[in-house]
Length: 154
Image (cartoon, rainbow, N blue to C red):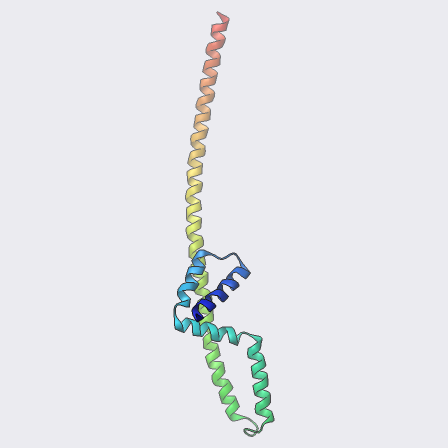
């Protein structure tokens, strides 16, 4: 159920930005199957939200207002430092995910460009054949007119 909900969120984000590429949707479906990826995505989504900011404002305000420890708040500093280390790791995971998505999209675009190139080459060949046929028809038409004009002149 969680994987499906996460996948729905990802689809929404993909559709919000651009029309969804089938290759990207497939990539996200595969990614949603991995528990570690879902956890990392959920943490990254929360850490990048305003709820995260509000929770920290409340937490710091309570920590300072309730005398849990004396100034300079060594324990709070250590906790926040550890949190920053973990959050920076999740930012890197998120960047790796974004890079992987870009690579999937780039690979799909490359395939599409190669198919378009092949179609264009086939169209050029067909265009040359049509041009040759037009030249042949023009030559035959001129020969027939010449023959008809010679017949009419006799």
